[in-house]
Image (cartoon, rainbow, N blue to C red; front, side, top):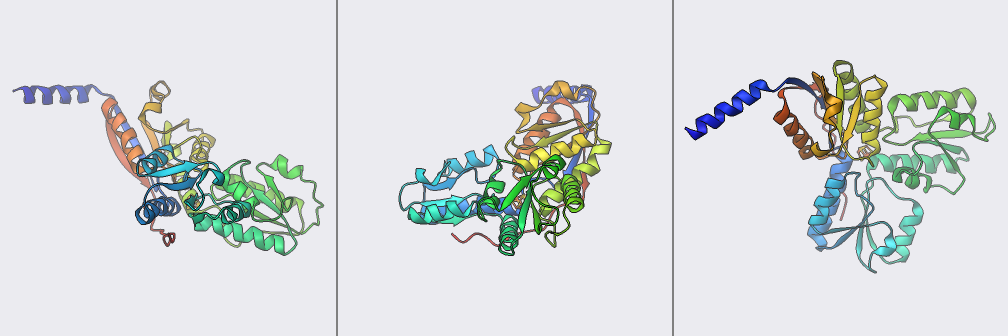
Amino acid sequence: LNLITSDLAMRSSEALSPPLTILLAAPRGFCAGVVRAIDAVENALDAYGAPIYVRRAIVHNHSVVRALEAKGAHFIEELDEAPEGSTVVLSAHGVSRTVVSEGRRMGLSMIDAVCPLVAKVHREVQRYSAEGRDVVLIGHAGHPEILGTLGQIPQGAASLVSSVADIDALPIAADQPLAYAVQTTFSVEEAEALVAALGARFSDLVGPSSSDICYATTNRQRAVRTIAPRSDAMIVVGDDMSSNANRLVEVARAMECPAQLVSGPEAIDWDRLDGVEVLGLTSAASTPERNVEAVLSAFHSRFRVELEEVGAGDERAAFRPVLV
Ligand code: SF4
């Protein structure tokens, strides 16, 4: 009888809950580069035992970092924090040549988990610089990927831009041989506008034959653009430090869809969802699906949720594992 009563109570409270349609973006969450980098740390732990040192966040998500810490990974900011002769995994964002040579000098055993699509951009800027072209890198200052890419070529050989104003201010002659490259997680639309501005100002400009913005960034931004016009608000599950996550928020907001970036259910600002009937939900390339499930469960406890998956569906990309 107790069970029946509580079941009836639950059903009646569900019936009282307001309805909410959630448009779940597909694809969302982990990309192939993130899976590969996390596997590299786990495989290194299996092969060599704990502790394994990891320079900086292996991917930009705190819950991923905490899960790896629980398995014996030890996160450090700089290589000199690792004991002599230890094994250090370098993050998916890539590092400068100086970091690699410093590790070699210190006798560290390094496992480079750089995403192959970031490594592609490294090779491009090296080639442009070797050809005698000044490099203009489109990206966000201070991001580890940018530091790593700039660190592939001599200091001063590249200029970083993130806006048309930055391009206007470049102290470079209009006929100087120039090449551009783009941060893999930059906004697709903004990058197009910046490349057009470079083309308008410089007469001898070359760029990559295929986009530097990776498939995962492109697909997740496209899914947000599909969902945003139908949504009263958008939740992006991801970390503040994730470039990929922040771009998804910007893409939604640019389409006048109010968006919140939340790391989990505890970070949701429910007041901002007052009156929302259709909610878009997505996650960054570094966000585990369990974090999306936790957010969904929080919505289920407050609303009568109808779930609809929208977008191009799952991705099939996979990279060869990192050798450990
Ligand atoms: S977001 Fe793109 S560049 Fe970054 S790890 Fe994933 S696939 Fe690689």
